[in-house]
Image 1: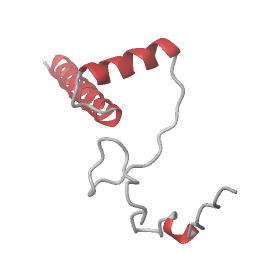
Image 2: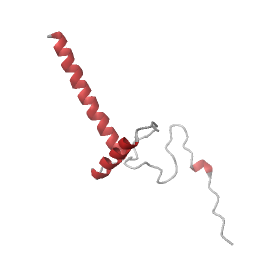
Image 3: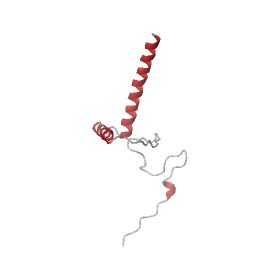
Length: 92
């Protein structure tokens, strides 16, 4: 007869407000202990998802979260540069 798994104390699975989760190994891929991650849920076309996963894999050290952060940072720099250029054109 198979053994029953030992009971899990549910209080160790839940994080209290302002406290990190107590379960060892609960960090997401690419997350450091000092970072707090929250869910970001949205749907993308299948081809986009495939490209995103492939590029993250090909970059080696990059994880999905790191690739998304780098992409957002690059887009923000580009957007700020365009905004600055646009303001200069209007002023000059």
